[in-house]
Length: 339
Image (cartoon, rainbow, N blue to C red; front, side, top):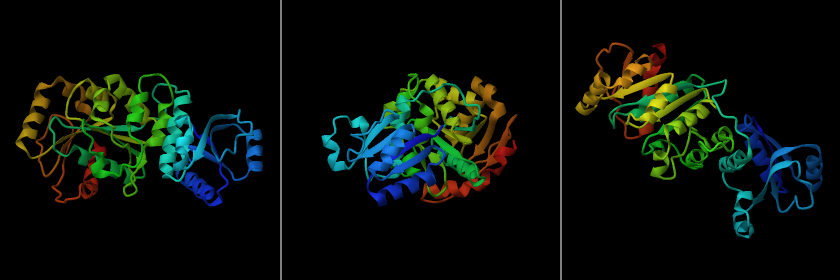
């Protein structure tokens, strides 16, 4: 689904910049109609129906906007205090990605959402370990970068208790907490919201979400919420890479259930080896997922041959920049998809 967006502003340079950027970067989700005069606006409103419209300087006050599902005011920051309904406002001159995120979020709340898994579903790869500090995030992002290099559209979903996202990506967009708020309530269009608020790393090209607004947002999610989040994210991309917390609760099991592949990570530390051994020998969850598992020995670790599953031993990469580490390791994960 693409949003039909009308933008009415008399500022020619800003209108051109906005239109060009939206057409170039958001053509798969937004159809733009630009009006720079009252005459153009009058004609557009008479002839077409729009999902969303941004009106500047009271341009719509004498017009029939009955064919606009969501009319919004486009105003500068200094005029914000004179507007009574904050929900009807979009601030001018902010980052265009932020404008898109706000539009999508507002539109998602009034748009019908048909639940269930899309007929087109991403390949889902879950990255997990029973031990912390083994490099799950590094492996997850290495794999995501590898899939981008193959020409795939990739979405990275971080479900850690405390998010690692700020260490790897710029956080200038809206928090994933906006998605959490919509889960399970049966209202709005979560898919539309996800498309609007996910960011894309300019270097590698991986799409991602900004971290939750607070610690409790992640812990409040139920197993059913996680299942819904996974399903909806999988319906908007070709590859979904899920970076998980180290716990193995019902939420984790829901992710395992949905995943096509599970990268099980360990490293050279005694703690990691012991915890991995306990999980493999004592935990009944492993029996249910072992056909999906690829074992990853990170930081130069050598994982012994298991009864099933591919084993990949990654080299130790010494670098102070975490981004450099995962970019370097991405080329070492070629055999993941050969299992």
